[in-house]
Length: 229
Image (cartoon, rainbow, N blue to C red; front, side, top):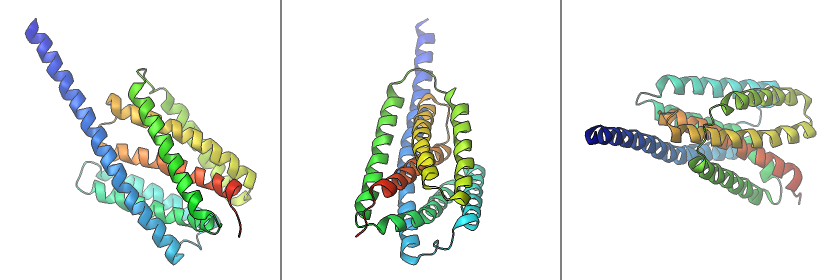
């Protein structure tokens, strides 16, 4: 009987060790992925290379590039190419973010707005990581509702590109903060519970959550807190 208990304990220990390894690798890669994002944003702001990507053309470039990279990441996540492809994606996302950052930097308090958005995003991540570590119930049922919410946001965002409504931007940004904060909790809980065993896929999911929360916070801060000289 004691041998059977020991075997179970050892097996559970192996599973727990594997989950901790995935979570640790995910956090390291997530931190690393922010560097190409900052670099991409800096290149975009410094060169103005994305300034012409407005309206339908900008939408096509963003969606085509993002979904193309995500497809490539999924195909390479179990190979040595997975990490470089992911980092290439985060550089691309930084480039795409540079137009909004340039607009915010046009305000006299632009740098402080960017730091506030960064601090707010970090705060949301800390809260969701803490909740994921203490919540015992299974959150897998949230997935389908969050996916529907993300699709609704995507459709609303596409429509607003053509409408150009400030009110629409505010509503979409507020909904995005709520949905992707919840997605953050869901994705972290999946890693902790062993539902996600590939750290590259886990990093991609969390990166998208963080990117969308930061972008939405920055948009709201620019609309409500931007000060002209």
